[in-house]
Length: 257
Ligand code: IPD
Ligand code: CA
Ligand code: CA
Ligand code: CA
Image 1 (cartoon, rainbow, N blue to C red):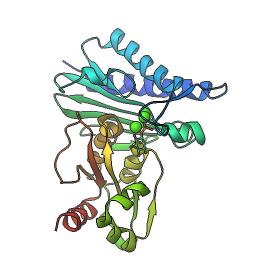
Image 2 (image 1 turned 45 degrees about the horizontal axis):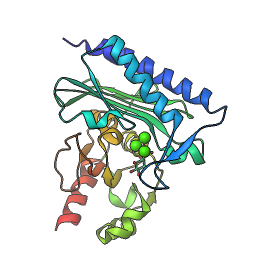
Image 3 (image 1 turned 30 degrees about the vertical axis):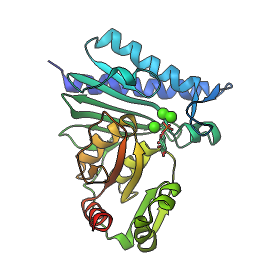
């Protein structure tokens, strides 16, 4: 039987420890390489943070499994039992080029249900947290339920490239108060939860980009789905929308009618 308070407290300690490690590593030179293409970067720090969690889990919760971006993902094909879905650094391009606006993102799922969520903005030292049924917090301050702000008063976030690919988004570009592209899906979902954005839209995200954010956003009444409005599986790459209920409904309406 899992003690979720205990798991929450332990994983929070590890997230903060990972943040300390990242800040320390940034004082010396970082090894950068590319994966699928020249814009798909990974560093020795991404890999070390994932390894840190793997080792911690083996020791403390040997029956829990880990799905992480930098190695073990291919081993996970179902969410049976307890699965930690980790993005050791979300926003690696920001990490390498800007040294800010990147996060450690973690969602802990039990039999497919998101129980714990963390998104840690390492340079801002801002930690978004949630334990299912207990609300969501930023640095210990409870987040309000998301409000159904109108599109005209909303700031939406999407990668500029997606707007070029899907002209149906033009309506939102014209109507919304503003559009942003921050480069860290996890932080953009956290910002929807915190009411700093009204929606975040992507055409292609992996489970580790969204697992922590989904737990956090649901705790404040936000909606996560794929582009068709369906539940996410947290097992495959998919389209993604995180939004307050009003903007989510509008997106569904405009994108599918
Ligand atoms: C990426 C970031 C980025 C999003 C990409 C993700 P990574 O994650 O979240 O904002 O647009 O789709 O892959 O590779 O930096 O962990
Ligand atoms: Ca990556
Ligand atoms: Ca990511
Ligand atoms: Ca990553």
